[in-house]
Length: 306
Image (cartoon, rainbow, N blue to C red; front, side):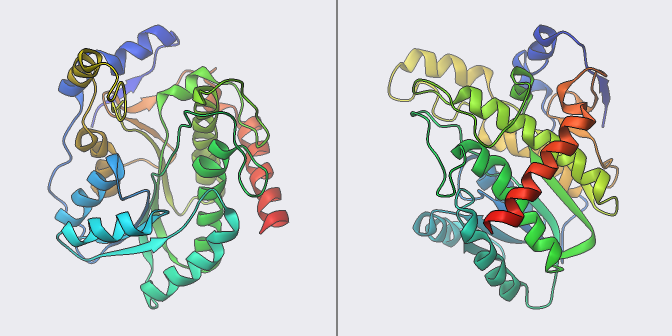
């Protein structure tokens, strides 16, 4: 896989994924397989997550889908080929996570997770909303819930000693400079909260790498997928965007590459068109002080609210 030194220019960086990203996005090789490997993935019942599940099953993995929508997930599982389980979890309500992990332990039956994919994410198109514990909902689902899921799995010894931890981020993080539990936005679009949450995902992945060096931890930019863009509003717009952006299957490829390929480097950010990236020194994702403080914030919530 190629390595790309990222430009300091945000405009040039946006062009890197917006220009011909369909042609530039690699397809994950069929080998090596994931036979006898167990993969747990959040949000695996739709979009990029579902296509990732299909790719994992095709390579022989046993997959555990962790998702909020039980009926939808159970229906989808019936259509999949391979060994797949469903576990209901609500990442936005952190009190549901520990009971779900105990059920996960039962599914594993003394076995351990080889690959954990933090894939689930929301981008609210509605007024500011809080989680049951009082945190901004995008933060709660995209970052906090995944942190607590990881910590619960790690503390209960459900991960192999060299597990791969893959966190789905996205270049939209460039539009933010912080990620906090109490962020409040105006209007009906939560794009700013979403970009802030992706900064949090980047900080989380890099800090996890520093704190748990035995795991192989990476952040992934899957590409930009037009899920819901212009749906039922402007058919021409939808057609144009679909011709430029990736399908969910295309968006799953970098997560699959990071799950399967032997030369993946821990602590790196893998981009669907740029490969392994070398971020500029002033990139917000590389701010070690902020990432360390952010981890402490998550730990404080974990200790207080669980």
